[in-house]
Length: 97
Image (cartoon, rainbow, N blue to C red; front, side, top):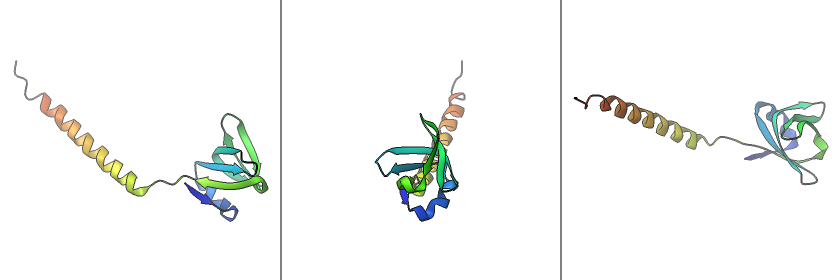
């Protein structure tokens, strides 16, 4: 998670979801967030479409991918697929009935 300041509100439109903490402590996860006329708008489950005045926001957070973990998972996934395919292809050659 990376917290962003109110000055960085324009960054949230690049995100698929943001976590909002209100001044009263209420928290929402807004999907497909946008800024419209000084309000943060998006879809909050189970409430549906939600408009939040920027003055009511205590903090905003966006989830960022850990590039190291993403690369490692990709490499392990590819290696696993190669091993799986080689096991499947060797399995048919050993049978002689």
